[in-house]
Image 1 (cartoon, rainbow, N blue to C red):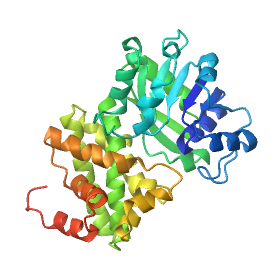
Image 2 (image 1 turned 60 degrees about the horizontal axis):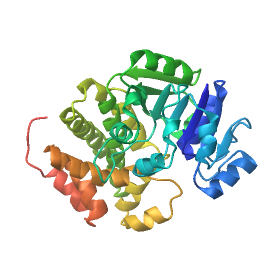
Image 3 (image 1 turned 90 degrees about the horizontal axis):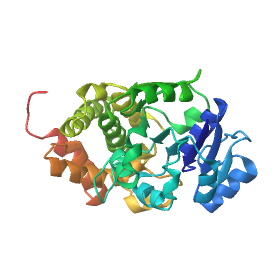
Length: 335
């Protein structure tokens, strides 16, 4: 297959390596000129995937004209959510109407700040209605660093066309990467987006020096909040017990690879958000998504106390210790 990946961040590069290993021809589009030069010169980007050398057969470009002439059969969207809409608007519309195009797959996790929309909804805004049934989302507990090292990983691919999902399972899967499928696009996207906020909360707990009891409570109540929002948006409850729900939450909230958890740790230690973000090479999607989900929950009248406290800690300079105390002293109720 001819596969284009729009976004040469850590996750985009890890998928490029995976899909190249599976026998596909890969073209990665990357806007950052320094990153692009490094990839072309060394087949690596140590800032994003330390110690990983990518296969020499992968091609790189910053030109949408190159993307067009490549005539991809699959296009993977791997840019941060807040930049997807503007990036798509720079492409030629005929890229998306090609008879060769089998699927458009989002691997980005978040909610757009300006519109409060999921990635699927952003893509429907920007792409022709004739290909909406080709739009899919890939999510699950899948740190780029570990996929690039070929450690066993499972994900879920969601979409509306089951026959297409079965083809994509074969394209992505191998001995160290296994793809399941789901018809619940909204649930998969909400799970992937909101778990980043709970991971920030988990980092705050760690930064404050609290223990395993606190983390266990946080993750348990965190999946409740994720489920509440998803169900309010017509997701299937069982989705949140799967890979894009509890699976992704556990991985992101407990792993040292997690950028969102790192932000939380530093907030818990008393640092300011702008200082933390200024020193990071990669985007922590949960930071912008915290603001989006906070406002989305208000709009839908969904009770999300953990999200609320993270929002106040990030954007209102609330003392993290005070946030934890408020969560612990809320009105008592049934589980």
